[in-house]
Length: 482
Image (cartoon, rainbow, N blue to C red; front, top):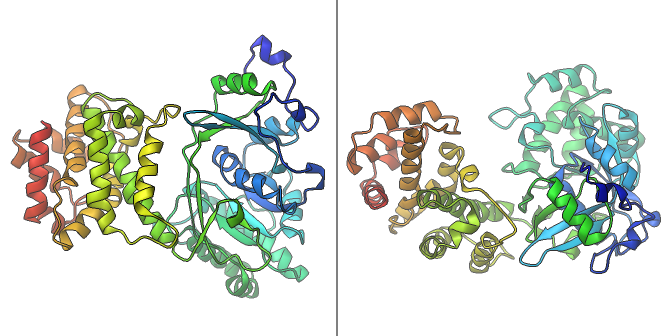
């Protein structure tokens, strides 16, 4: 927290002070003392407070049943910052014109290791109908194959002592067990982390854990509990003292932990929540039977073009996405890649206009308030490119379409690796040692260099690396980028 004198003298954001916020600040459009807690959320970090809590904050204006109990599985930091503020915090929405909104949907913050029974009481309460999670991929305690990792220390502990869990899965199962014993319906469990088929994987892990505890409980969960797949998207930069000072100037109130994100936000939820669920569609959430279609569009259009701008932009000396997309040649590359090469490989799910989505992505990239560093996007290319670019390449080749433009990010990645090696800089990638060894042995001509890189089978399947059309396109792009 800032120690600036002005900040220390400012009125602290709280339930009594928020009505005194400066004009132009959006305030909760409901009476917080009439709100019920109907949602338990595990992992109340920045993304949750910028995303799911924002949607529920809007929903509370028309339905007071969906206040949030936020549960931290480890650190008390969020509780210690927000409890003196009665759970209130400021959301700065960064765009060409930044706006500020005080969010009031979090009514309670619990720290699970310190008060597990309070968490169980919320999970078992009849009015709790939804449990959401943002615990990062590792928080799901899954194996590489996507199954419950029964060797994970947290799961070993929780299976031995299911009434005193430490994992998210352990808490979910114990909460469901108590509801089962009380004759209550299960809550819906909504995973909100960027994990393919997140809801399905979490359901399988939950059922597997429950099976080890009580087979009857596992059968009940399998038959009755909803675990929708989801997709979430919004860039949420970290909070710093500069944001605290900016929020105080804009609101007139001191906020220990404000949050910032781009104005764009997206939440796609599989439409299986059933009767009695919150009306998320009324506040802009997309309910669909094709989450994979949205995931595929995001992966190829947003993430694929992000990687393209990262590698091609770094070669031209740019630092951020904003700078790169401000380069006319790179903006044209990004647009042409989306319109002419990526969209033809996609089938639009109902409710998604791919051309409009592509333009919205470019508009997001032009946001001057978001400093998204190309060097960070460039990390882990060996893991990202097969999903972000190579799938599109394969579909294009299978359809007999040109892959010349799609070869540019691949060739630019090769040059990025060469540049990092020449500078003696670290390469952040699980295959860094292998890739740097390839760079050290490059023959120095486009044909030989490309052949050496394409021989890394952990990135390039043999079928693709041996396709003459792809090889020729990468060689051409590699030579032009030299």
